[in-house]
Image (cartoon, rainbow over all chains, first blue to last red; front, side, top):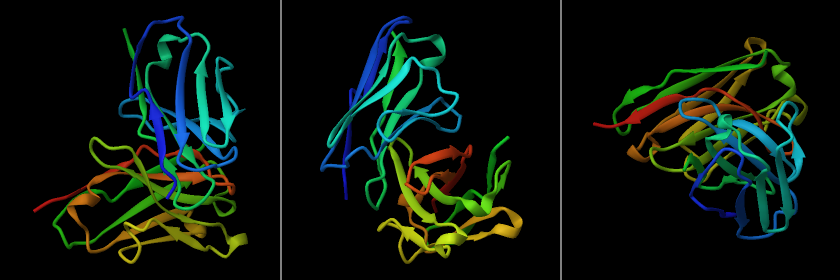
Length: 107
Length: 120
C-alpha cells in the first residue's frame, strides 16, 4: 500500500498568514493527489485534484503543487473560514490512501 | 444541489451485521463511481471500497481490511448505494461516509456520514 505522510499534524497560525502543508507519498504517485478540507461535524470538501487543479468554487487563495512523492497545499492568506483540518489522498492505485490530516488552528 | 445522505448506522455487537444505505440526489447517479470511506475515532480516513458505474460493469474494489466481510452494492433505479457489513469487529467502529468519485479516483463529493459502533 502507498503510505501518505502529512506534516505538520497541527499548525497554529493567524488570519492573513501564508500556510503550507506537506504530503509525502511512500512511492511515486505522479500527480494523482487530491486535497480536502473538513470542519468539525461537516462533510469533507474537495479543494484540489491532480495535485494542482483547483476544484470549481474553491477560492483562489488555495493552491497545490508537486509531483512524484512530495506535494504541498498552500493557502496564500488565511481567512477565518479556513480554520479546519486538511488531508491529502493518493489515487494512483488501490487501495486509495489518505494522509493523517493537518489541523489548522488559531494561534 | 448534490446530496448524499447516509443511514443505517448504530450500535452492533462484535460478529454482528449491519447494512448502510446512501441516498443520492442532484446528479446522474448511474454515471458515477461511488465509494465508502470511514474514519475511526482518533484516526485518519480509510478507504473501504468502490463501486464503478454501469459503463464499467459495476465492478468493485475493496480494502484488504474488509474484503470478504463487506459488500458494496447499488441500485441505480433508486439512486442508492449500500454497504453490507458482516462479521463486524470492534476495529470497524467509525463514521462511514458515502462518497461520489471521479473515474480517475478522487472524491468529488462526500456525505455527512453515519456512525457505526461495534461493541459488546
